[in-house]
Amino acid sequence: MSQTNTESTPVIQESIIQAKNIGKQYGNDVILERVSVTVQEGEFITLVGASGCGKSTFLKMILGIEDPSSGDLLLDGKAIPNEPGPDRGIVFQQYSVFPHMTVLENVIAAKGFQKSSLTGYLFGKEKQQAKQEATEMLEKVGLSHALGRYPDELSGGMKQRLAIAQALICKPRILLLDEPFGALDPGIRADMHALVLDLWREHKLTVFMVTHDLKEGFYLGSRLWVFDKVRHDPQAPNAYGASITYDLPLGHAPKELYEEIDDRLRPVDKNTSLSTGSEG
Image 1 (cartoon, rainbow, N blue to C red):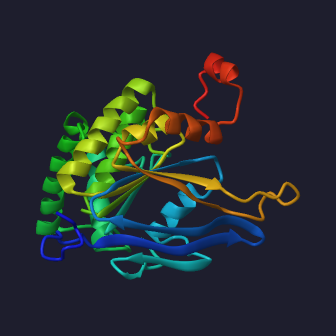
Image 2 (cartoon, one colour):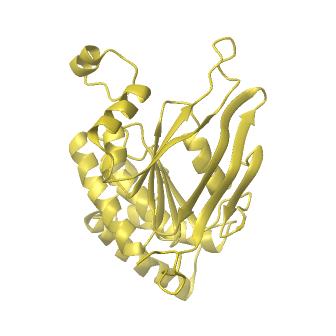
């Protein structure tokens, strides 16, 4: 039956993020231009593109620590606040943990900063509740055996699990991942992929993940964005910014399209790439 029949058309899910002709520049350097896109709640977006093409900048605008130079970026139809909030959690490639605190204390502190931006300290029943929630979250990310360890006693993969627990303890609607697995060994990365997918489904998160690994971008999530410049000036390489040149529902892209995107992101000699094992 045709979907134009309003009696049989399903209710359309509300968008959580809307970018309307977004542009971003620093001085004369244009980073992003003409970015217009809509994201529904519960989607898992992977962002790929060459270094410096604005992927992380776009994440920072969603987080609220960067403002668009032009256009509108909306959260639930309203301008995104120009500061981070508990509804948006972020995990960076660099481990954002407190070295002087144990694993458990790190996650409790993250919960405390949600309550108090000044000290992060919790007391009484609030502290006991936070401790219980932190313990449960650390069990979900596979760190229940390391509650009393300090960050310098953890492997890279364990530190990223801790950073994810810190982000999720505040129960965000949106989880921002900025190349979170780039420094991890392939085997550990595979474990982290499975963990993030499980947490995405369980907590019904909307996820944005920046990666330089195209295979990772195609494997994870439900939708892939490719950031690239469509206009170039050899005399002024920063005169034009990147936009979203591909917006693909994952699981439906043919192999030829994957190879075309790979060639655009990594315009290097294939024999050299294969011999060095470079991921670009």
